[in-house]
Structures are given as C-alpha cells and as structure tokens.
Image 1 (cartoon, rainbow, N blue to C red):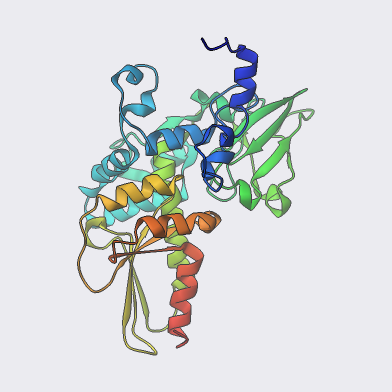
Image 2: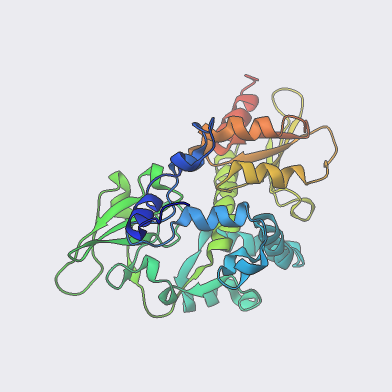
Length: 335
C-alpha cells in the first residue's frame, strides 16, 4: 500500500519542473522545465495553454475546467470561422485590430472598431482578471501589448512578466509608490521604460487568452513580416489571400526567376500538439509548400516540429526572422 503523501510536499513538488515525472529518455523534452503551480499555488500560464493543445476530452473534467471544452485546433478554427464570414476588407481590419490593440479602454475600442464592435465576444474586462492586478495597476507587455502576469513577492512588491516574451526581457519588479499614478517598473533591460500601467479596474478590456494565443500573437508576427518586407522592389506581399487558408502570400520576381512563399504564422506553446493539428490538414497542393512560421524565441524546438512533419513535403518550417532573411537573400540574388 502506498504511503500517504503530505500535501505540503505535493505542493512543493508541483512548483518544480516536471522532469522527474517524465518517462526515461525525455531529457530534452521542453515539458521537463514546466511548473504546474506558481509561488502563490496558482496554475501557471503554461498549464492552460498545454491543457488546450494536448486535451483529451473527459466529461468529468468539463464542470471544473472551462478551458477544457475544446481542443486548441478546434478553438482556433472556431475563432477564425467567426470572422471569416466578413467581407475581405472587414476581415483584414478585425485581424489587424486584434493584433495591434489587444487591450484598451472600452471607448477607444468602440471608436476603432466602429460598426464591427459588439459582433464578437473577443474581449473581457481586465477588472475580472486578478492575476494581472499589481496593487490596482495592470501593465501591458511591451512586445505583445497584452496584460502581463503580476505575482506578489511580499511587502507590496510584485514580479510582473509576460509568459510568452520572458526570454525577450519582459520581466520586471513593481514596487509601491507614494501618491497617485502608476508605479514605475524596474528591470526588463531597455524595455522597462516602454511600459505604462493602467488602472486594473474601470473600463479597460482585453482579448481573452484564447484570442491572444491564436490571433494576437500570430497576427503580430504577420504584420511584422509584412512591415519588414514592405517597399522592396520586385517584392509583393499580400495579406490573408484565399479566405485565410494561410496568412501571407509573398512573391519575388527580381532578380532571379519568380519565387513565392505561402505563409501561415503559429504561436502554439507545444510543437508536438501543433504537429498533430497540422498533420490533420489535407495537403493544399501546388508547387509552393506552406511555410509554417513560428516565433524566433522557439527556434530550439524546431527540430521536433520538422521531424514530425518529415512525411509532408507540402510543409516547411522556419522562424519569423529566418523567413524574412530568406526572402531578403532571394531579392539580393544570394539564394
């Protein structure tokens, strides 16, 4: 009979990496570094993302974990289906707004969305999110503009960080200040001065975590790629062709023979789950493969995704930075 496990020991174990629990031979598995609970004994952000991406539906869990109702690719497909019915110009406008303004005051959002506001349930009140409340203030990530997590460190001090952009320096210390006004964040390298807080209460709205993960993050990659390739002679970049079967169509006609790229940006946390979803897609056909673009920060996991997709020549995989570099090399006649 197994010995009873002290709950304190269990909680401490859940705050550490999962490496001791993984099967033998899993030394390189990125799950080994993931923690289930943070220092406040709350589920870490990674758990919610991975729960969506690796979900095996269990009826008994549905009552307790609302996010466990749909697998990630189903959620992603549902989000896109809601906006794909729009006219092309409105579709592109919605995609751009979800990427550029994932959080703002309600009045600002009304003005920017115009007649499209209220047609979709993409936004939630920030006041209902205690996880991003640092003594009454909320801070958007300087990279993705979505609210960062605020974790108490005691004595009124908070550690404020973005789960998706931690490697880019989006981690700060928030200390109490006298008087009114938002606290000033410390740390974060050169990014700290770019972060302006806003009241965690009031009329501020932000896109849901699902929208942020599957529309905002890839959307910001898409527009960054477009902007990096704009104004180059002989290069044409078209956003959202063919009812968004993919995100960008890039065509280079100079200086060599014409070359095209069909690009689909993805910001999934788990490349294993992403591979499963991609393998369920039928082949698109045509001479140009579909380039799956992932964030540069996840480049160390690319071999896993490439290995899983090795039997699908209609896919190729690279980071956003690698794609821009490849297109620029082609335009210079270096490919």
